[in-house]
Length: 222
Image (cartoon, rainbow, N blue to C red; front, side, top):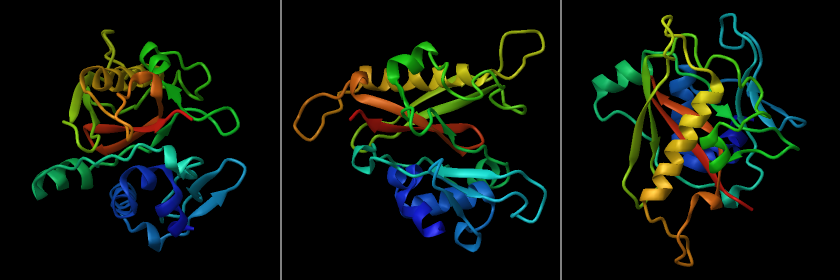
């Protein structure tokens, strides 16, 4: 099932098969094709069974089946430019799992407007802390081919004296505002020469590409 993950999942459809292979290697610290990947037809997700990495861990959801691959926005995948930085910011730390917005059967993804406003009542775990070991800030990047990269630094700890990690719903809002800013300030054209706006795009989720960087998974609205 690893082969299907590397062709039919959202990460593969967004960044390409070879980049998806590298992403899962960086995340799991081993080659995805050496592992037993399973598929849940009801949830339409690819996963690893608990403890399959040789140490105690719960079931790991890797990705979902891309239900409308022709609508996925393909992007470049950001990586540090030097081997030293790659080892420090990608290989050494434990990266977070991909976050998805929405559920099969209820619509996958949030509109840019809803995400930017923090309207995510249907997102499971929205009130959970974004990360118990979150840094004080992270970069959210949009690498749309043919256009300048946008990177936006956002705070991942709140303003309380305890400096708690922000909740997932706040991180979703950061993602939405970043994509909104990109489309507002960059003239992105579709194949017919019309400008793409926030009203044309859904945010499917976000994938962590380094200890301090995330990228949004995007799809055109049907």
